[in-house]
Image (tube, rainbow, N blue to C red; front, side, top):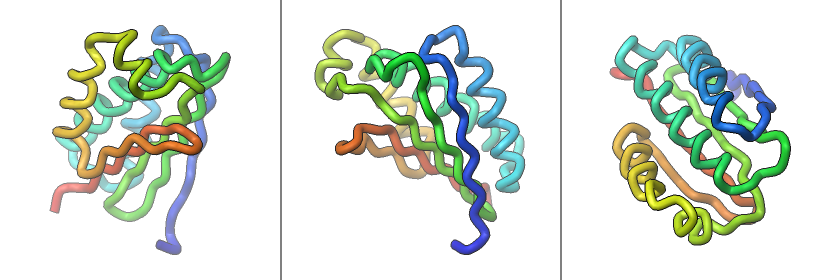
Length: 125
């Protein structure tokens, strides 16, 4: 889409910053014309993905790229060098993160090379 607007947020990779990520995601979601209910889904997805990303040892800072286009918000969380399997083994609640993100997002992917979480949420029609 020609009318996309990426916003990058670099946050210390510590769960204590989850609220900042959640609130930024909610604000960006309003730019994509999301309903109040969908903004809540975006908040939940952003927080779950951020907490998961922190467990992958991404380094001191974790980059999150929000891309806004009419009716669509994507979020990409850059992960560290820990494999998805190793991260899941280290955190037994990771399976719940997968379930939440798969149910809340229109698209949820674990991408490799480089490792990242990719989330896409669409505005209600």
